[in-house]
Image (cartoon, rainbow, N blue to C red):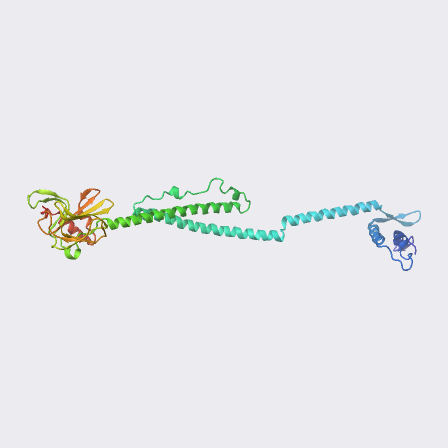
Length: 383
């Protein structure tokens, strides 16, 4: 049957194509026409396949020919087939591009997914650090409150101003670069600002602690220096408060008139040990008019103590002494009517009542008894 042959099937005739169509496309290399031992050219072969496929894609329809009483096949022009093929290709390419763009837009790549995971971890860590900061800030605020209301108050120091304590924030543009980051920038900038403020507060508190430590050492030295114990040993004084002449106007033993008495007279047996009532430096040790054998100790902070009418002196001028240090023995040298210790206290150059500085080692009841005994209008032991 040739290429132009037709046959009928269920009332319809179809035109068949034979393999000679390929022969018409290949020319001399058509199947069945090449010489023995020759092979078709590859380029011509693939070209033939392309045109064969293209031809098979061409639309065709059959129209009944009333004149010949047969169905004639009508095939669309090749240009239409090429246009349709090109349109389908462009549509496929466009769809592929759109699909690729959508995938890249809404479906992250493996690298992007890893970055997103790290970003989530960083955000979680940032929130954890913020929580840790809040806890540390609360501790620092509590330390600041205790420092102001307890330690500095006890040492009579000015408290750290709350406005100063809340300061230390960065300038207006100090964190502008961080805040410009779109995702975690504002959170990091906020945390960085808080950390800088906390660092400032800790530094301020550290300097305050240094001031408190210096003040405490000063207070410790001051407390050790201020006269606070009786100048005669407790065991030998036997806590007896009789025969005690206190500060104020007392009857003069010779004149019999009231005269200002600027100290306390402790009536003790001769040879009773006399002790320094506070830490200091011996300013004077020797004979002094009216006082006989006398020792004067400069305690610093405006305080001085005088010990008079000693039988002997056990220290030298310039010697450093501590509270309770043996400085002499009770006697009756100078203008004295009998064995006793005349004890004076000076504060900022003015002689004050020594009874206020004899409280150490006594119970409240004993101290009150000592005060009452010193107030008695009796005769002094000094001339």
